[in-house]
Length: 239
Image 1 (cartoon, rainbow, N blue to C red):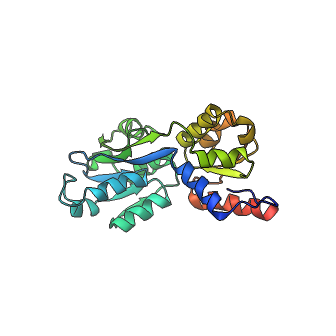
Image 2 (image 1 turned 45 degrees about the vertical axis):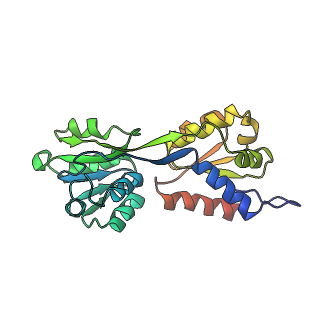
């Protein structure tokens, strides 16, 4: 987020540049197809996994996309649930925003002998859904549908804005993104500048990952996009 400084106010374009730069911390566009990606019930804890299913929908090995859309789907949170609905899923149960809470919802809703589950996820997961549900007697397949590749440096534009003190804060939506951001800040010797940022964190785990920056971490009341935006509204109102 850009700092409204004077006399050289940061432009909307500069703010957008930094946002795009942060998006590059994780490039989540390396999708993978897997055999038999759909079974009895679908669990999804990333929108990207559902996008991978959509990309594979044109006569591929996703075991008949139309049939898949008729399966019950458990989404980790509201954003994933919306993506699922946009794709055509109709039996959607929405969790409160974390993988651990989603596993509890599944265990409370389904019986282990009701059929095989498939967990649509990436190569790196924050919570071990497979082990958690297998421990409760469920059979779960976990095909890797995408991988997130971390950037090795901050883009020059982002670094320039950070060094110039034209940023007030950064929104961090996952522990891995926060850890990558913190590591790149240290790599660029910008720790002093970054320590002045407000880090708006999706969860306590995200806040913990950004601790090396020694910046102020503000945690959303719930792990949702709406609550992250509510943090920004609250900060703006109090400033």
